[in-house]
Image (cartoon, rainbow, N blue to C red; front, side):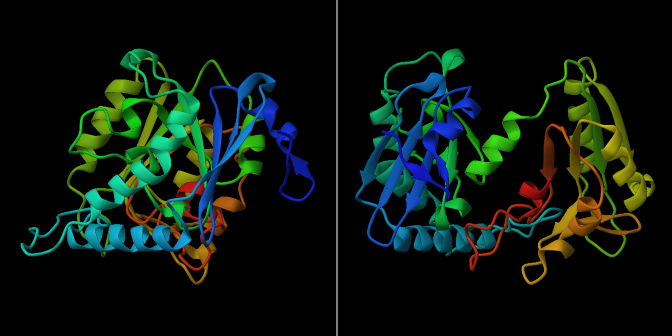
Length: 302
């Protein structure tokens, strides 16, 4: 199948960027969903319907997930209040519906539902649309049944858009890597984050032997020093408070020692050919339910 996509692009345009396993676009429509699978190596792409799921189900799943996360205080970093009894946990139902209606059919179509050794799991890149963009696709599954979860069969990655896949394919991979870790345990005017010191020690233990590791902590984490260090490093790990500004996304940012490092300031710097940005901060992938297909959140901007 050779289909036209994104205006003048076709599936052929994306094949060179698909290198480490299939690329799956999950489109969410009013009446049903469908999946487009693009394979590496020029293999014929495939398209099929997912009739048991639709945009309304996705919106309800997103709402159920948000309600459960808020009740468990999992949208917040820092010291969390004790979980209150009597709240209905809807997360399990959300993950089960995603598994049965979308991801088990996709993995069946790909022939990935066999007994594959854990060290040999295939890699797949998901590109969800609509309200699916807010859901944890990699965690979909029926947790009451063995062998009924996405991560039993594949290693998942995400891209926000098809053009992002093309952009990532042009980045140069470096043999040596410089890594920056930023930790803000006591943000002025905000709740403390007592776990960041231990978090950064774990990061350092795993990264120190294979990367040029450096870190900025507490009073060192000024907006200017972090921006300058980000330009000098390939990877960055941010452990701090953050805020997503839905009305003005460029004002979304990370709370540092002397103020907020917002997206407008980040976008004014040059970060070409950079690698991984790990955001261990609240609200970094929250997004805006009014614009589910707009790839403008903290985790995507970095």
